[in-house]
Image 1: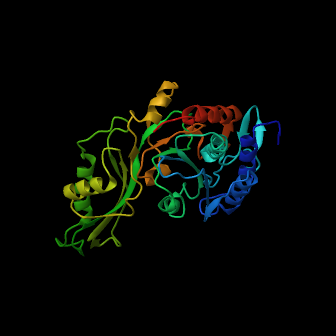
Image 2: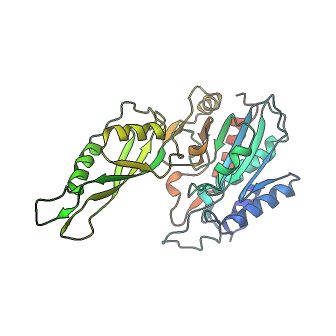
Amino acid sequence: MNNSTSHPATELLKSLISISSFSGEEKGTADLIQEYLESKGLQVNRLGNNCWVSTEIKSNRPTILLNSHHDTVKPGIGWNTNPFDPLVENGKIIGLGANDAGASVVSLLHVFLTLREKEQSYNLIFLASAEEENSGKNGVASVLPIMPKIDLAIVGEPTEMHPAVAEKGLMVVDFLVKGESGHAAREEGVNAIYLAMKELEKIADLSFDKVSEWLGKVKVTPTIIEAGKQHNVIPDLCKLVLDVRTTDQYTNEEVLEILRSKLKGELTPRSTRLNPSGIDVSHPVVKRLIEMGRVPYGSPTLSDQSLMNFPSVKLGPGYSGRSHTANEFIFEREITEGIEMYLSLLDQLSI
């Protein structure tokens, strides 16, 4: 491993990569982050594998949250190196979680360390959260209820430091279509498969009135279908699974009610908590980013923004297309440039 890097953020990233931190199994990286912050003289709050620190919280000031996650997916096939042995090569740091979202974690952490030394017009919290990759309940969702009121969040994910001002939500919906059983050799029963085919046609033709400027249309996709138990019995049930990608024009609950009004059958969401998110481009943080030459866009990928009911923007070093791929990497310069850009954005920001 090449140890030529000099910025402490890149050194911390290499240490994080070397510790396995699959979703729900992040104790090692949480311990490292806690120890690192404590070495800077900070009092660290800890809940499960979530760690956070803050400046003095003053009730007459707005609060900005800097958040990114330190869990990773499991490595897939195709790695040319050990995913847990960070390799520095031609200006790249190669390793599992380097891009998603280790670079954001270490960048935002060091941004917090710098900004806490300066007087700002806002309170500041840095949160390294767990279980983002599996949308787990022991991640950011467990921490937000015990935090002060948040007025703005910067959610660190690989966006090439362009602001994602809207993000699609997700609902997985179980759809049960009921018929009547009968013998396949006689004119008996009501075949649930035929009934489901009619509902699938409706789904294919679904149109939602409101279209998002950033995310386009709500998308409903059947992904699993199951019916029948033996060849000579008319199936009385057909089970489908719908993958529903929502936009900032609707809440998940609103989309669910529209589906129930248009489809015949039982629609049961596995969860409605992963909501779409968005922030107005007139918000001071977006305006400053545009002034800095950054380009707002709508993100199709899910993040911890889906669990935040306050204004947030997704912004971080790295490229989303590298996430969850073999030989994942981040350029060292992306980290140092990201830190500089975060500081230019946040220093003396008024919200």
